Length: 250
Ligand code: 5GP
Image 1 (cartoon, rainbow, N blue to C red):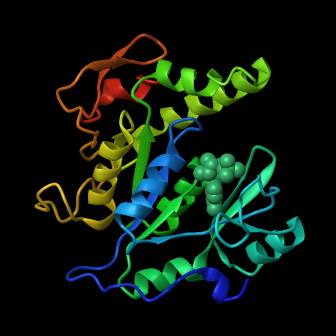
Image 2 (cartoon, helix red, strand yellow):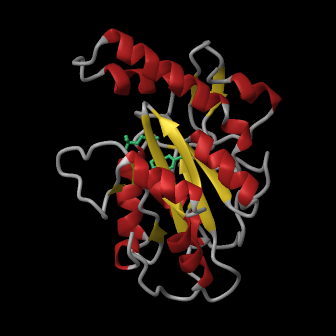
């Protein structure tokens, strides 16, 4: 992959403090792409990592923009040469984050975002403990089920497998520094802008959501309606995680 393909342009230098790396994860169906698209609009100065994948492009996906689409041998070479910040296998394909563009963005003072799945998020936690891990949550388990089954075109077995994966991903929530509930794309994105760039929402908190077990950040729903996990356990959207929350989606 050439430098030109890395997509890193010199960005504005943050007025204070080092640039921040934010990892955004969340189960399939939670609305990650809508929120991330909106984040690109609201925070164009942020560097968004372009992952490498062995899966085939979907219709409308552009090589070098949505992903760098490579053959398995090239993916292997990049892993062997230490070019991946993290990498994982997901749904039969391989995905990885090219290390250099992210490191260069951060070195030039530019905040950076990775949108990756759970195994990759865990690797980043280990290799870059200063990175901030944010989990995007559905407003309720039912809402997620609705999103994953709503189209009604999927094989029930495929839907069941996706729901099981989603359940496992949601159970990892306590490993994350902050959560954002996607009940409304714009509200969820505003929270994410604040976490990723440290700006907005009064701007008083220079380092929001840091530290495992730190405050969960919801959308506008603090004090809002309690929502139910698949086990029927109620939860308060946007509330701080407690021991009882560990299994709220489990
Ligand atoms: P999709 O094939 O639907 O674009 O992505 C499938 C999953 O792979 C999503 O959960 C997405 O977040 C994750 N993913 C995309 N790029 C990367 C990456 O570079 N590393 C890891 N670990 N996961 C990724």
